[in-house]
Image 1 (cartoon, rainbow, N blue to C red):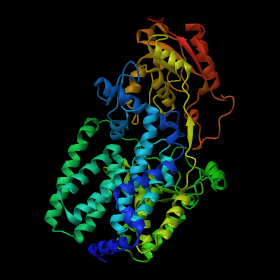
Image 2: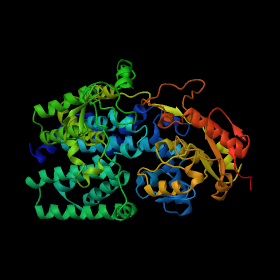
Image 3: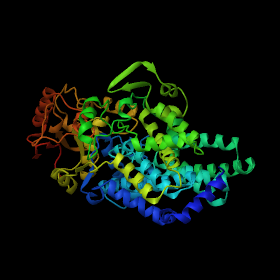
Image 4: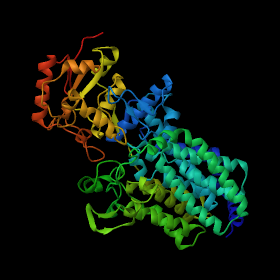
Length: 589
């Protein structure tokens, strides 16, 4: 069936279906996606500002980003460099993961914890609406587009990513980019040139890796378009070039610091990691399902390969069934999108396949081939290929649903997809800042904060969390791409080098005078980082398989020696609770 015939068939179907008529109104579809977002992420909307998604280390790095961008924008500073980390040296953030568009949208209008929750809701709503438009465009049915919305926005891996990875769940502009591309190549027009350029730039400004996924999708679709162009090739190339120029112009200001750092020779990415998806978990329902999650929870806890978000890979039986119908019935475009789905899923397996918790080292998979390739090597974590896989699955689900079913059947399919993926209640943790941080913010004990332990690894996220409250410079920090220069500066300063890391050397007495000269006023000894520490009452089982403190612990003997050094140099702590002991280095002033 040609595009014109499909559109005509869709219009005829609209005359017979009340649901189709309603969903063809963009406002109604957008409200439907909003209602689904609020319902299927409940109680997130009700707990904004008082609770956060129950993520691990990267959650607080991203919450800190909102806080830092608010500070930078309010003071007119560049957000790509901060004096507040690695005091007294500061930190280059040009290679840090910022998600600039999220920062510009939410950093100035809400507190950091609220801003993170708002970004989850906004991204989920617009991901649903964008997938709806794309599914409708390709299937000719607004009702089928609603199925695409549910599959893409509420894909279990995406919801798990929302617990801590702001850049990776901000997928809302990826389907909109593909939708604008299809509209542009089919009909042309200035507004779709602007839409394609704008949506592509917005996708890139959510995350540079999402930009690579967008480029890959457009390259595949572009090749298919040029083989059978719906318009003259010269006009197509002209319009795409204009859209590309617009996208570059919009994204370049935010990309320029990163490009400058790469051009200077800095290492701009971490090495690839074995974080592929597990074959056994593709069809194993996720552990947070309210009805049958208990049946799979033990498997996730015992055979989860890594604790960070991204491991969940459940595809869903209903979406796979619809995708199979699309391919089996040879729906137009199904073969192309099935290929995109299959290749993306293969790459998501990683360099070596996993099967029910076991790494199959003897088999090397195509993901290993990406490491030496320019640009593609930046896609260093295999499970991120579930993003284009989920979009392809959403499109296939829309194609498989067809156009001629009754409203009742579409409603049943929508409920079946929602039930298949159901992730309720959305996992939250209460946000309870320490009273000490409020005291420090009010001016108790002047100077910067030296955390013990302090580091530049993900274990420093607890210090970032505290900094949001006390708002003082800190000795450590966690930047996405660690800087060797920062570690070298710390190593050259003996007063800091002796205290650095989770197993500090502690080779000499605490050099209080030197620390004061460097501008430090307070030492915070993190008792909850002592090996073997347990809170009262015990913590609930973590959602992602590892507690935040497990990102780093000090051996008990080393911790006790650090405390003795602090008491010898500073006297008794001026504040102490179950988790913290605070020592004054210099008087108030």
